[in-house]
Length: 426
Image (cartoon, rainbow, N blue to C red; front, side, top):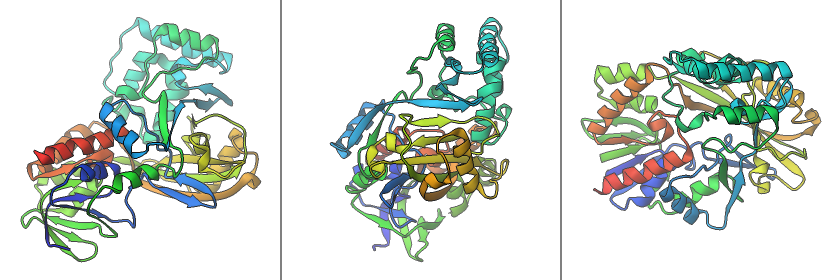
């Protein structure tokens, strides 16, 4: 290994892979794990292809569409979203705020009246909770928006800003809300109304296709420290490598930890970054007939906030006659992970009716994702801006969901990789 590279990519997440694939200059990519992919990894267990939670391709950008299409040509399936909410002992369609049909009559009445009343008066929107109340009213807030988002982010909705919402929270008009209270109808609202997924190989098939054209990638060698004065990296292998510039998809708090020297303002900003983690239990089960893709679960009665059927993304993720189920439980310093969580999740699935009994479970596979959701509290925006401005002034370019500390999709990560590659070439 030579001792200096003009450009070094830190981490083998899809944003860095997309950038490294396009960049043809003097470069190298270092990945701490035994293979690239980050969270977009797939484990093969007794005929089941288990992703690290649900990873779907919601594509709108033409450049990313062309990239994914060329990488996975002949290995993509397209699906129209079939997602649901489980609450009050019933399944209702997503999004909750425009699909009250199937809920108990008193809940339908409360939610519908809440939406109507919210439209008649303007309220303060200082935080996410205020926004929900002023947009959908108290019924939707109480029965879904507040309990679900508290489970996902692990902090009260009033501690969240509205910066993350964008395309992620559908805002149906009153006509659609009323129609969805009177009848069961498919709703194509939201950014994820349709999606693509690999036919075979799970989500890691995209990673392998990206990595195939990366000319110089070294796995099993993570970056331990970054010396800005000497422009030198120390690797977990003990090797030292000089660099001209860096592209990193490492989580922003980890980038700050490994970099020296740093101004006090950057260290203090990084201390304000908060996140929630995810416990992911994947299960291979005996066949259950359902065409659902995923289900949101609000409220504290159940530990999981979402579960889904990967074998409905592609039947190749499970042996014939079996079903591939993934589950997600959020936890953080504010909401610790309960003991015995594996057994708790299986009990939840039985009570919800997703599986009949423990005997249905043929195989399980667990993952703990330390960094899952960057918490959008009032400190996040300024803290992230301070960190990113400093690193970019030193020719260090964070990319991806965790590098830029944001709530984004796989498409966003790929696009950032393409953009930074263009920037490097210039």
